[in-house]
Image (cartoon, rainbow over all chains, first blue to last red; front, top):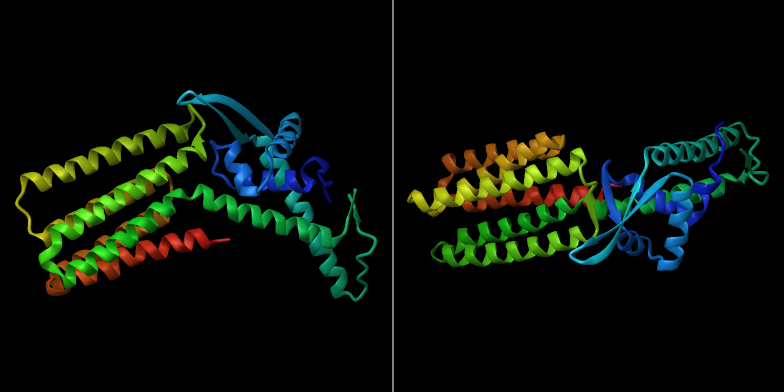
Length: 114
Length: 189
């Protein structure tokens, strides 16, 4: 089983990545749109975006639109791949738990180490 | 890092929830479709039952539709954009030009040719569906092509076979399908 991605697994970053991965390729979303969609504060969103940018999972573009500053965020190919792998690991954990449950030896208290 | 199945399930639920919200942001075209589906349905039904008010009905409908479309366009531009210089940006700009030319020609034909209200109705339906088929081909969206073909076919059938009920037919087979498809997309998980 692949490893849990600790950068992505943080709840806010997970939701940010889910939003970005849902967008069609070659599309950028504004900072304010993510903020409104996920109901986050400027500071909270900004900090998590920089963490994802440092990991190479997103790119942040600052520009001016009609003389107003605008920040656009886009998922990178590496970020899309990492998010897909992380989602697959989560599903594997659930499936393996179901299989253990079906065999009558379910024990969820220990968790899964990745 | 330890992850329990409960935590994995909670994370997947978060992903699902965020993805659903993002899809509603990304699928702006579904709001356009919903808006014009409602306008077509109301306009066609009103025309069926108040045919003498056809000009006034459609002036009101078009004004509401244009205003709604402008609001949607402004909202959309504040949310997302294609990456500058990308293939998507190229297609988007070409689609904008295509729709501008298409609707300009449709208006030109309306000015040049003396058409009855019913002919104007079928002209607009087929012009918009022609656009839907071309756009669906360019952005690789099969549903847009299917909607264009089916609505065109059904509208032409009603135009020739049931001319006395054409407007109500158009409301059912042109307006309502747009509403149905847009709601399907907006509710899709």
